[in-house]
Amino acid sequence: MAAEGGGKEMNEIKTQFTTREGVYKLLTHSEYSRPNRVPFNSQGSNPVKVSFVNVNDQSGNGDRICFNVGRELYFYIYKGVRKAADLSKPIDKRIYKGTQPTCHDFNPLTATAESVSLLVGFSAGQVQLIDPIKKETSKLFNEERLIDKSRVTCVRWVPGSESLFLVAHSSGSMYLYNVENTCGTTAPHYQLLKQGENYAVHTCKSKSARNPLLRWTVGEGALNEFAFSPDGKFLACASQDGFLRVFGFDAAELHGTMKSYFGGLLCVCWSPDGRYIVAGGEDDLVTVWSFLDCRVIARGHGHKSWVSVVAFDHCTTSVEDGDLPAEFSGSDEDFHEQNHFSAGRDRANSSHSRLSKRNSTDSRPVSVTYRFGSVGQDTQLCLWDLTEDILFPHLPLSRTRTHTNVMSATSPPATGQTPTLSTTTGSGGTNGKDNLSNSSTSGNPTNSLPGTLPRSNSLPHSSNPANSIIDSAFIATSVSKFATLSLHDSRKERHEKDHKRNHSMGHISSKSSDKLNQLSSSKTAKADAAKTLGTTLCPRMEEVPLLEPLVCKKIAHERLTVLIFLEDCLVTACQEGFVCTWARPGKVGLLSSQNNPANSPSGTVV
Image 1 (cartoon, rainbow, N blue to C red):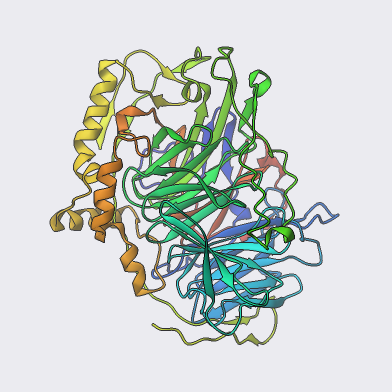
Image 2: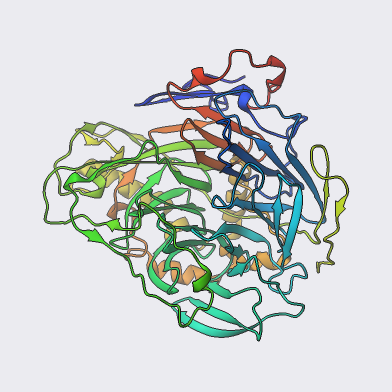
């Protein structure tokens, strides 16, 4: 049975939680899922993902939602906090045979009430361009899997472009495509364009325009996620080798790197102003990295298992930067001579095209609060505040709070398989089949601290003996697992059992070759991790402030895979296939009182 707020039972599913803004409430009538509302058996399936787009509908109900569950892909009108979800009327539904959708992305520039461009990546490596409003399948990229045979891990439209998109694979490669170009009938041949530390960029050698335009090889192992900066000029990549790498996109220049405390990085996001990047992964931590200083400025500990999604809340984040002088303009090298694709790209007209840099000599107080959230395989939602006492520790604190610290940690992964692409649409979708088939090969206990702590719920490093005890305790309990990365077989088995209890199942691999990407099997990665610990790439735990979550609530029965902040609500999804809407404080009353109670889920999430 669900509990409201902070119930005493650890296994209770929370239906509301409180922050300084007020109470966030789960809207049970606004839950999206498969029409039968039956929990999906998630074993062997790729993570449930959600994409949104606004089609600028004059009726004021222009939001559209897309989500994948197993082999199925759904497209609905999203009513959010306004009206109950009607699952009996999907705009489009597609069922794929031989492969599964893994990720998707709408192009906001081309979206209208009559047409949307939706990219869908698949477990066997293909990428499909569809229009779920017109119920059309316009193009299939990497159809013969000549470009890359591994699972698509992330797909994004290039900001400001109607035709260019970027695709990442579990092979560790990224490819830049143009929707106007074909992929060719033979495997592409590449020519080195640029090379740097643990990355290389190649152009495709061809007499005529063809895809891919570029191939990026980044790090070792899978490239789990990438994210464009708000101004579209930079690209942050989270890889299975544990490195965050940030590139100037057009110039293909490496701007900076960061190493996880342990294991692979699974997710990454940018602050709305582009000043900070947050990454999460297999070390159960969220790590905050400064874009300007190229260094880790804080870590957050609240999850008991792998962190699967991180996201900034642009509505709650506030930066009063009247006292923030000096603009910083990132490298905007023109690269047109070497990149023939650049001419076709439209630059995003972003309000964040200039990243502001604070003058370190200015000692005037600044009011800064960055709110971000994270969800993990421990089924918990955490909200975090990053404030000026962490960002600018030399300034006087505006407010303080006393908090305690709780420590714990875990790790390991899992694999599976897939092949061929073939889709059937129905039940609100197109009649008939799209034959796209292909043959495929194959804790520390709570420690009370005297005095006060910054209002960002942090434990900054200081000479305070209590802080030293906490840091020492964390290092003592985790150094053999995190710092040395040398696990004996018996310990591996114990960690695997722990992670099963914490729903930590890892990303499902599409090929047996993905097994090579597991960090635990890489001796090189272990040696490299030991070298980086204690450096600017990966500071020790006692060397940077440790944030505690403002909110940490269990909100699902299965591992969480989605966290999206919208104006009126935040959206989460779990591997059972339930997409939940949480109304922001004061917004719950917008939901119509005439909602049909028959739409209420039968004991699934609440």
